[in-house]
Amino acid sequence: MVERPVSTASWRFFELYRRNTRGTVYAYFFQKETMIKHPLRSNDIRESNEKLILNLIFQNGRTSQSQIVQQTGLKAPTVFRIFAKLEDDGLIQQCSDQQPPDAKKNSERKGRRPNYFCVEPSSGYAIGVDFSSLTASVIVVDFGNRVIYDKTVELQPRLNRDAVIDVLRVLIQTAITRSEIVQERIIGIGIAAPGVVDTVTGQVLEYERIEGLSGYSIGSFFAGLFDAPVFVHNNASVIAASAYHYGSAREENSLLALLVRSGVGGALVNHGSIFLNGNATALEVGRMVAGSDPDTTVESIVSEPALLALLREHFGVADWNEAQARLSNDEIAPVLSTARTVLAVALRNLYHVFHPEAILLISRFPLLTEFLGETARLTLPHCRIIPIVYDPVQACYGATDMVFKQYFRTTT
Image 1 (spheres, rainbow, N blue to C red):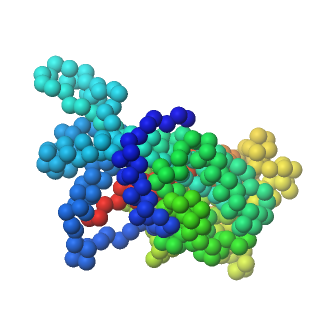
Image 2 (image 1 turned 180 degrees about the vertical axis):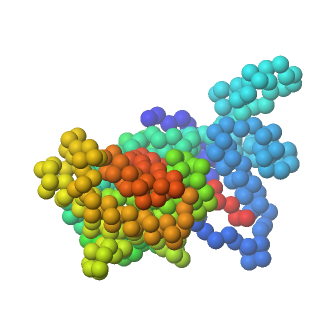
């Protein structure tokens, strides 16, 4: 990709942002600051208004000054001045297509047509990462929220923390190089990590399937390595939030998600907010005890490896890809009857605790997704069930959303 030139002012804008956030790890969610504890100065208000307007242009895709006046209630001269500054800084530009969305409807109206503005795509970039003990993925999106690079790799079995971190390092560095972007324009890196995550420190508090990852501050490491702000959250939570805001769960007020890969992760999204235990992610569903034996957990029965072991024993399949090609849901259901019972109990218990409007079930393979979805429908026929196949690009896209949310965060 060849970048369009951007003004020196734009570089200064992002460098100021990076200088204020360098080497720091941020949470996805923050408590709202109060006016009493943090009185606003005129510069704060001006910066907040600039970010507010830039965010609206970013979210709308294209908008006019008059529309911003109507949406924000700011005075027209203030809006015009901010548009001029954002354009001078290289953050926005007049859209190449100046035809308004309702052009045909308003074709007979008289008067001057407004100018429409869009963000300047090459003025900044966000990097999104998602990984587990099985795979690692990365994407790069430009400031227009367009994916310009993506890559997914399978991980070798039983890699330790240092080996996995090195894979992620190479993935991110290759993404930067292949995207032909300069590092100074990276506004942040979002990482969707497995296990229990401290969303403030960027530390993976607990994850047993990658030796040495528990207690490791992955956020601090990559913030120092790439000299950019890093935002870390649990991968099930990131995928659930992405589905809630942009995907198949957009119409739901509350969403319970289960991600089945090497383990079983969970997340609850309620009116756009991810359920946390303090700063730490919660709902490690896979660690729930299944039965009277405390060592028998949900993920020891329902995870990808556990289910594949049963299919390998009964059908001789080598992996999930072969199972996908050879078998149907009707064929595997009797073999996985115990797993279905364990999953049904877990779903029923979670539903009675949280009462979500919908349940999102995610796995990497359509056959497994179908099995999970059918189990959920049989267990909770009155609840909306949304089974989806894991999409690494969409997962990483949710990780970049953390970057943009923090970037557009205002003081007020």
